[in-house]
Structures are given as structure tokens and as C-alpha cells.
Image (cartoon, rainbow, N blue to C red; front, side):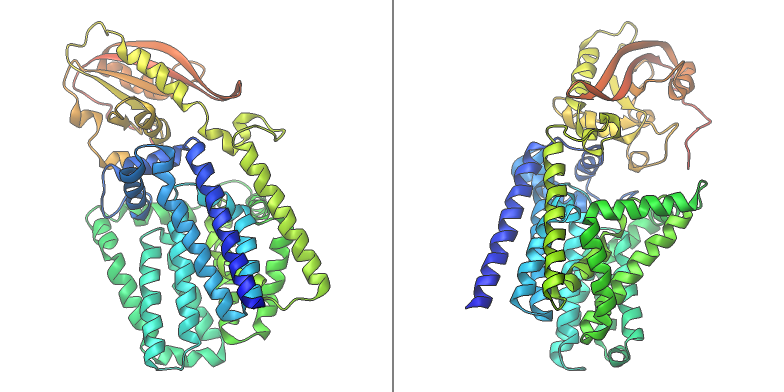
Length: 501
């Protein structure tokens, strides 16, 4: 009866957390990366410049049900986050029992990484869900007799989970690499490499991932190359500072107490039964990979998110003592406070930082920009006798404009002075426009002439500076943008790009 009560309470916690995430997802404006993925969803493909296609498929499914709204964009990413929690709870039950299930539900509900991160429509939501499923089925396989039908069956389903993870984000490749290292490192598990299960799982995963491979092959492997450069390409600056930034980001995503307790639980997991030691090795491997990546270039705080799935399981299943439980309670309370502050700050600024430095403020003000552009768009331009096109210097402004403007028009990210992205693979202004067409262009406000405007000026008859648009949250500026009107396109385009690669 006590175990049943624990499981019911865990499910209630997970459902309550899922409802809270769904409500915030419906009310909070979209961030630029989310509108970028929404643009992907309007052009479904087997791959994209930055990531595999899963997030685009989820966004498309959500907008079919709930429309082109924040809820529509985030609907299925939030649902997949809930499913991730269910798989983690099921894995905790296999490893330890009902108490671990309840602790898993609570930690997953309050940890900022999942509590806040799984609100957003990003590739991390389906990645964490598919990886959680993979870990569950691998544990089931390892708990089955070697070379048994049950073991092979669980390995096959794990291969499906891994394939879905690879369709979500390329960093999913770290999961099978970590599992192989774990199987090689734990003497009792090495015999698992002599049975067909792991290899069948790999083949299934590759089969599911093959459309992305073929898409990359047809696009000069640009997505693979971009991510390798993005994660491991050399960069200047202080390695020590990047490592400190990396560690600081992890503390913020997990909370300092829970992070330290996860490290302790991972260390002690090597004394536990075999599935736990393998999970510990996977977590260490993923975290170590991103520690190395930080020596090369800046690592975003969410990149090592995969490492926390096995770490969370080990923390929840760790044998408890009174002092340990007190610290665990304190860690849960602190994580809850961090999450509540994050939730509240998304709507009412309570942190003592300027809006331009507050990540949650990046979703503010886009409606105001759309209104300013729409006013400019409705004006009669003096020379153009054809059409007026909408463009921005970067994908962030281009996708937010497309989402917030009436009828969601086609927009272009010119990428003349910024990094390449998926807008380069879609029809561009040059592909769509006719000579004498006009362009409304949004760029950053800078002293003097913006480099993109300077590059375009020789290719239009008139170039006029329009209104300034200020993205602000509660009157506190986040970003200053400038609208430019370029009329009478000559049919030519800059030959020399300043795009950083």
C-alpha cells in the first residue's frame, strides 16, 4: 500500500508540473529560436542547417491543433517533456522502488533544467524524452538474462528510442558512445557486447536516422560540419573563464545543492548493481565531453542536459540516511525557489538585472516591432511599381517578424554580416524579387551606417532610414533596432559577403 501511495503521489506531482508548464507555455511570448523553428515547421524537411528535423515536426503538429500561437508552437514539446518524466519514473522504479519514483518526480518537476527548459519549443524537449526512453529500455535489457529473447526485445526498443533522439539533436550520439564505454568498463557487463542486442539497436537507430544522413549528403554535409565547428571549433579568449561560465551555468540549471549531490551519487554508484554503474559512466562521459568542448569555445548551459538524466536517476535511487535526506530536502527547496523565480520573472521582472542582460526578456517587444514594420509596409513607397519584401539582417528578427505580422508573410534573413543559417537554403530575396521591387529591412541600431545597409545601398535606387524600434520589457530596453526602406532594386546583389563563418 505504501508503494502504491508513493507511485500515485509521484504521478500527481508529474501531472501538476506538466499543467504548470503548459499554462506558462501558452502565456509566455515566443523566443527568437522558437519562431525560427516555427519557420522550419512551415517548410518540413528531413534536415535543417542547425539541427535534425524532430522539433519542426512537433511544432507543425502543435500548430495544426492550436494554431500559430505560443501554445501551438510549444504544445508537443511540453507534452514530450511530460513523457520524459514518466520514463524516468519507470526507470527509477526498476532501479530502486517506489520511493525513488517519487523523488524522481519531485526533482524533475522542480529542477530548473526541466521545469523551465521543457516549456520552450527547442530540440532539447524531444531529445530528453527519447533519451529517457533509451535509458529505460537499456536498463530493462541489462536486467534481462543475457542472450535471451527479452534482452533482444528491450535492446530493439532502445534502438528506436536512440533513433528518435538522433532525429532530435546531434548530441544524442553521446548516449550510445557512453553506453559502449560503460559496457567496456564494467567487467560484469562486457559479455553484453557478445550478444546481438546492442548491434541490432544500433542498426535500428541508424535506420531511423538515415533520412538526416541522406539530407546532409545532398547538402554538402553542411549541418554536420556546422555542429562540429559550433561545438569543437577553436575560439579565442580565456579557457579558464569559459570553464567557469560552464560550471556556473550548470549550477543555475540544477541548483548548487542538487548538483553536488548528483556528483556524490554518481561516485557512489560504482558500488551498486550493474545498471547504476553504467548510468554513472554515461553521465560522466557526457559531462566530460562538454568540459572538453569548453576548452575550445563557449558552451551553452543547456548543452550537457543529457548528462543529468542518469545523474537524476542515481540521485533519486541513492540509499538514504537522515543527513542525506536533509540535504536532499534543502536541494529540492532551493531548486523550487529558483524555478519559481524563473517563472515569475518571465512575466514580472523581479531580478535586479537590466532587461538587456536578462535571458527571459529576449521574448519581449516583438509585437511592437511588428507593428512598426506594418506601419512602414502600409506606406506607399515612391519608386517601386511591383512588390515590397520584408527582410532582416539575422534569423532572429526575420522569424519573429514572420510570426507576429498579420498573415505571417514570407520574410528573409539576408545573413550578409551574420552566420549562415537555414534561411540560406530557402528561396532568398534574389530568388523571389523582380527589378524595381522594394525591401523593408530591420537591422541593429548602430552608430553610423549599418554594414548590411552599406552593402545593399549600391543595389537600390533609394535607401532611406525609417523609424527606430525599441524592444523593451516594462519600459526597460532590451534591444534597439532600425527600420530601413530600400526602393528600386537594380537586380544585382553584393558580391562580397562579410558573413562570419
